[in-house]
Length: 341
Image 1 (cartoon, rainbow, N blue to C red):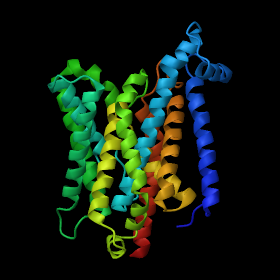
Image 2: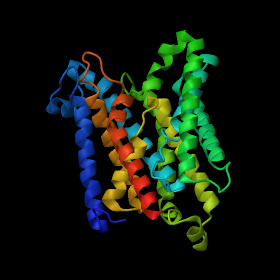
Image 3: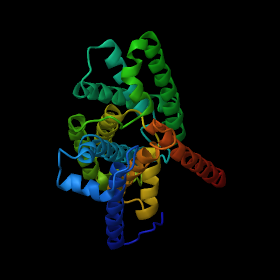
């Protein structure tokens, strides 16, 4: 696969440019909203906070935590999608399409409505459990039929489980309508109204998942060539796959616990990363993280304006961005198979 950036030097420059764009998107997330704030004021609040200045208070207590949430969640979802696409060798793989986000949401809803769990530090474990169960069920369902697991079977299994988990979530909420407001933010996805201590509760899991992903980047590059090739080079594919799955659960589960079910970030960003730098996951993973953070920051800014003084759910905005891309990937995959046939 040819990439836009061929040499390591150009890849490094591209990553530096992406980081600059990420910084600009972070500043835009703080500056734009119902109350516009000048970029100079934003910098002043971040560097020299004055508690007597109302704009400084808005920035440090509301806008900056929201931007930090979008950055962390976007990076986590994008890296989780990159790992899933490498593990399954399926271009449609992502936490949303494979039912992992839906499983985590269902577990969080059950924890809120049936168990005395309300703290994010408790709910994140429910999200991890739901994500892990969903991943295992998708793998099991896709492996049932003769011929073993295939990319199409994975997509079908993930879609079926997403629909099932969504229906179960709605059923639980129908039985306990009083709990609807408590979980509404998980159903549509949002980073609004978050405080920094809440992010600090899930950030360690995101960091651990990201570190594991980076550590697996070279083995995943080899694994993408096929199990036989990887085993021939002495790779313990079972360990690599297990650790990759664990990293996906950590990243997707903590992202859902923090911001709800936000789709398509994990689908779109790894494809853009591979277009830019090829299939070497030592570059794909950091590029995906930065690009995913940029996407969610800009999507959150875009969500604030269409229905003022309210705002669109973040999951709606990412869906509007990601659905055309999903259709393009699906059509490209079908055309490739038809040509091969």
